[in-house]
Image (cartoon, rainbow, N blue to C red; front, side, top):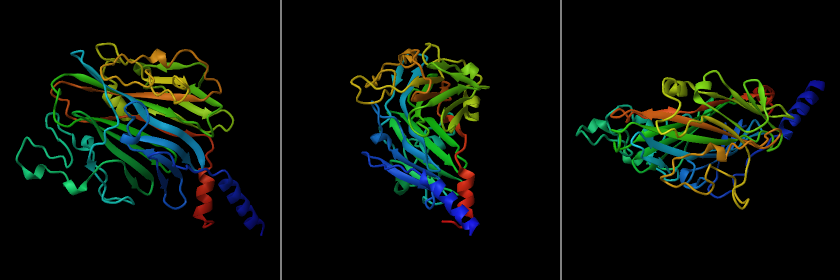
Length: 378
């Protein structure tokens, strides 16, 4: 009897805090994984429905991990293509582009395939879904068929993870965005930089994508930010040449729950031997931590260095418009992470993925939750 009461109370204590997203905003779609007794629940927006001026790629909102509020929003409101010829674009992120859908949602045998997934040759174009290389007449160059093409977001549910994938375009560029949420609480965002038809691939250039992550663990207040083990109290930015041995942690100072952010192996492979910035000296900031701000008029959050604007030719990204010395001690903070890739002239058709890894820290009570349901208390 005592054991039954104990388990009942433990189950109640676990489920009593359990939150779940409403996903009732315009364009929001809810995902629960696993489908029964979910560990991760969140809302997503397609690129065409995403927030910020000219969109922000695949957008994650109101993500709950094991019933705890974890991420208020994760998206990419700033995206650039910067050429050595001094041509530069601030690309848009709200044009859905077709990609191959998975064969099913639950445990698919064929996952979603984006432009970036098939762009594996340095000089062969893949064009649009179903990704036939039109430079040859070989029918075996087809990947999939037109009936398998889709726009929007593909959700794939596996035993240990749920994956969300999309494809979007800015003229000849095809960008792929993917988020993977794991059973153990890891979050792996990835952004792919691709070229569908070879335009300007003969010019060396950089791509830069800036994630904006508002973790809001257990609510917007009481955020603490650490660089390695050092508590940071004012807004700051870090650089690429410091990143290999550096981690950043955002956590709630009351509950102790949070996420540690690390650069991924893909980032190391792409960038470790490259200079920290492009020849025009734009985009030499990799990490920014800022106080949560509202744009002019206090009507919408500040999603970039140019609130409410995304002018195509403006590549002079101004980090000082975001990082300007405000206090972040026990505030609502926003974490920015830049993924950058370098496309060498005549080798730029190999698509490159980059992005960070988020590791949960603190007590998310996942082991207790799993123990209860593993023992049949559903």
